[in-house]
Length: 321
Image (spheres, rainbow, N blue to C red):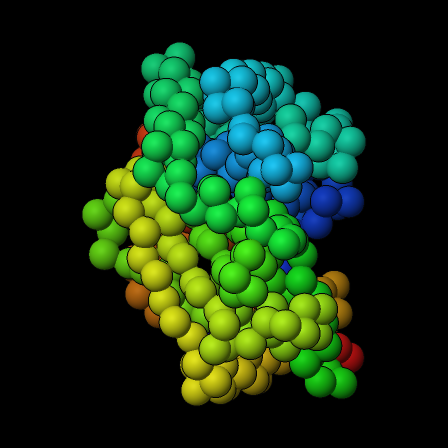
């Protein structure tokens, strides 16, 4: 979130303060709520793969069992169809995420466009299957380590107070303590040829895991950070030090200072125009709430064109009043 507030404070306000699930259905605040969680096909595929790993792969490994990946693929494809139907019929207008659970889905193609085409639906199914095949074939050693781990947590919500004012939340894809007493954090990635890495994100997760106090055995010197790509099958591994933790700590406090203007007043007493817009056109091009920000709320992209997707913040900070 610290990067986002530097790029566009207005977007942070829209996403974290302005969006409201309880506002009137035709209001800008409710439309922002829908836009902020709507997914394009690439982001939807990633969400589906993460769900499959969290729901059906890691639970089997925690029981010292090897997952039946053919069955996992069947479950994942069925989930694709259920989520597509949930979005197509706009059930998100009547059913909450807590009630719908795994089936909840809002697709940008349904919300802003003419709906998801059958071609894009099939591409998503095949993309999910391909990612799960890469997981089974190319990351088999990593899965074996999870199977024999002393403990493992998938998408564990880590929450703690860094001080009296700052509350930290982080949700690593996977964290486990292996048989060699080494802590491992894994970040699953479904990107290719982007030139980016998950290094800083993994450092933030490691900071949260070590500083929260839940796992006293976890120290920087016995932590291994793994970026596992589910498209290429490659793995990038990073070491982390106390100096890296100092950098994360600095980022948090800098981010809090930048977030103060967004949070210092009640949302009802604030307006989007109170906050600076993006500092460059590139940020607007990939903004999930652009249609509310520019007042259009109309179809703007093809269904397969990537846009920033919003799920619960993977690493966020809040100042406690």
